Image (cartoon, rainbow, N blue to C red):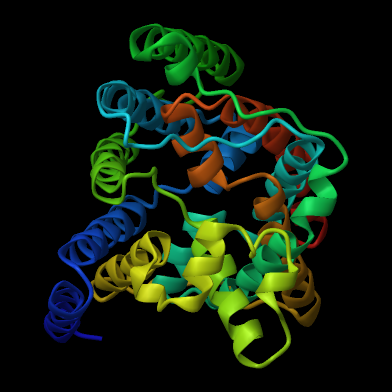
Length: 357
């Protein structure tokens, strides 16, 4: 697809949103386009960065992610402290979180993309990720339907460092913790590869700025998973296969309202659509290639996509909603999510190698 017609189409949709929905939704769509362009243009893959570290002792991807977390925290935490109407990405420490994070880390390596990675790679035209996108949505919806049962296994109240300590101590503690992780990563990686890569650094800066813009416009941190689950829930309701009023998650006031409204009013859905558009814009300049997959690889990849969607809902987010937005806004659940997801990644990489992805 040529870039000019694509740009005109994206601009027309943004104008439509401003005119027919709200200026905020139009601006969030533009933020989403920026997020997609930054992710695809820099090939800023959370999944890839972890795989590089484990398999090649190449820390450039993870250091880029740590830089992103630090910059996003520096920008978000003062805003949360100064403007109480903004909300943090809080999730309850729970059995659901532990299990969900582990299986998300496992499945994202097999599926070769987390929530944001699946979106931008689908926008780049990579067949596996294009096929996984609707399966991910189905899994996220099923996870939401079963979430109350998982939470019944044990949970505590969410803990937000900004509201508990104040933004300055919360930010200081977060930066110290990130520095310690960076030191450990540097020790593990050794000197075989450079520590920094311009592509990852530029991507981290762009994503931190855009995530902050999302926080200011939406009043909540950047997320991905909720939009997927909402799309599938609306389809299930539309065909008469699901009654949201009979489900714990979808009968919650906010969720019950969103499932009756157009997805154009949902902030997560709008940025997700924008991410696809931004990735398409990058793909219009350079086509992404991928190796053909066998039938077995397709089957395993699709199963991983379903599990990834399901586990992301149990874990209260993916690498974006739980790790990036959770840590950057001071949620303890983000710090719990990371080591569990990384443990799952170690298993997922073994499965990935076994099936020769």
